[in-house]
Amino acid sequence: MVATPKTAPFAPAEGRGEATRLALIHAALDLFGAKGFEAASTRSVAAAAGANVASIAYHFGGKEGLRLACADYVIATIRGALGPALAAAAAPLTPTAARDLLARVVEAIIGFLVVRPEAQAIARFVVREMFEPTEAFERLYAEAFAPMHLRFCAVWAAATGAPADAPATKLATLAMLGQILYFRVGRRVAMRRLGWSDIGPGEGEAIRAILLAHLDAALTAARREAA
Image 1 (cartoon, rainbow, N blue to C red):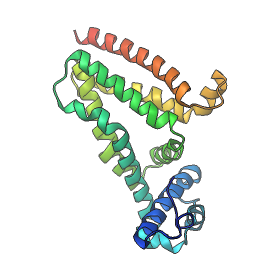
Image 2: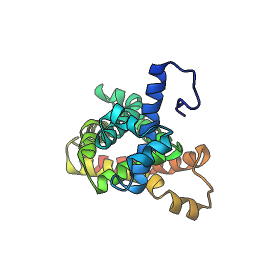
Image 3: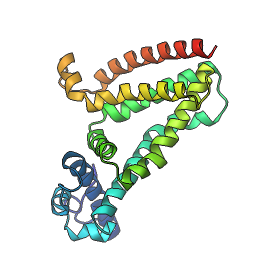
Image 4: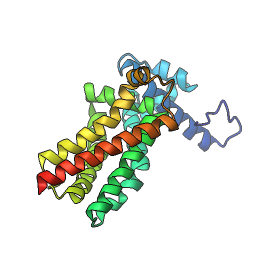
């Protein structure tokens, strides 16, 4: 959790400013995703962050700048969560190594998107941008979604022998990502049907096991098709 000036009153001025900036981003992610950009007032965002409403203009130039800062925060978070797992995608991979790398990526996405409670606000913000795309969505797509998916497709190609830019490769990888995403956006349905009170590490392990089985089945089918 980010410490705000209220919880760290004796922090240096520079530290207090950065804490306020991050608190505003966290509050905006939550409120923009839950209520929508227009419905979430700057006053409500500032109040949720424990900050003065004027601090939004000071740190971001205004409400639109805050929305773009939210997008930048999401991009940095995705890179931090998935970048290490995808770093090996640039090197030549055997089919076995590529499969193992895909499994690590799936595990990393589950750990980041499904299990971590703070991912809820990020997911709502992103889904809202997908339904009502703005400049923030274009930034998310160009700097996070498209590059990460390109790497995912490259690893899939190494694992299956299929072309990385083939429609079937793109569809297969998007379908795999969609399965994981469901356990965040469809979280309430999944919990109700499974009798879970939450989706924590134990539930995440159960999800991981079934999705890795799906991954292996999909790779087998793709290899057969490529051959």
